[in-house]
Image (cartoon, rainbow, N blue to C red; front, side):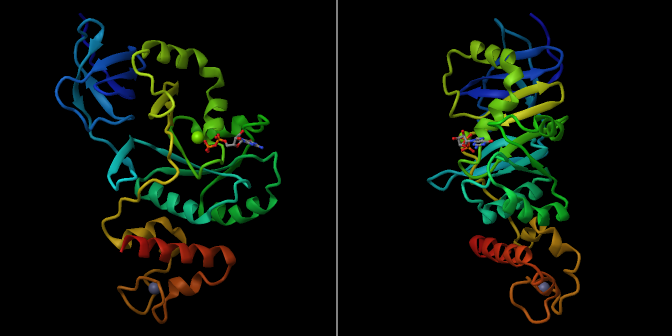
Length: 292
Ligand SMILES: Nc1nc2c(ncn2[C@@H]2O[C@H](COP(=O)(O)OP(=O)(O)O)[C@@H](O)[C@H]2O)c(=O)[nH]1
Ligand SMILES: [Mg+2]
Ligand SMILES: [Zn+2]
């Protein structure tokens, strides 16, 4: 019997069983004894002593943030905790959905994540998309251009993942699964070990997993993160997803201006200057209306 005193990170969950990991003990199987149904991939936990090779979770540490998703029947589910880096993936095919991009930026901002935009499929014509994304670069969201299929600029992508817990977001078909497989090519030993340990739970493609890329670099593998849920309690929070609105939002005529169509709204006026900002403003209004 050995005592595990280190903080571990939950990497897999299958019903009342799962795996957690820390740099000293490596992977440990755990079993949930009392009801801990709120446990989520990415949670930091303190484990108890091993009983026949399995440990129990003694304590779930407070999480920094929590990404949520709305299921088909309208129930909000917690998908991943402690994400530090939101990787928003776009490609020229399928046709980019800029409303989704702006909504994902808002969700990432509300979760205080770093935000990186990845333009995948650079083997296809991407000149127009690259031009449009320049507006986002100017807002401070770096754009990394890669091709998972043609193995282009993998080091650039590895660089933005370094020492972060990253989660790939974006519309269906942009290449999120392909990117994850590409990134984990060198990690086959670790992933094999995981599936070896978990023969009893065979949901590999339908549940969230956390891949350990190295001691401080983690990659969430979450199917169906096409449409996460913005957890907004106050409509004013929507402005947090629109950095360009922040600088002059105190210069509007009305102090409680929502920057929709009020007279002498300096925020809206400042966003009339380019096609990109006009579109971003319309997305702001659309999100506002969807929340009301
Ligand atoms: N041309 C091209 N196709 C790619 C690239 N990466 C992924 N794809 C293709 O895009 C399609 C959707 O990829 P997938 O990873 O399933 O997208 P997901 O829905 O975001 O997980 C697949 O047919 C991939 O082969 C790329 O870099 N270039
Ligand atoms: Mg996929
Ligand atoms: Zn205003």
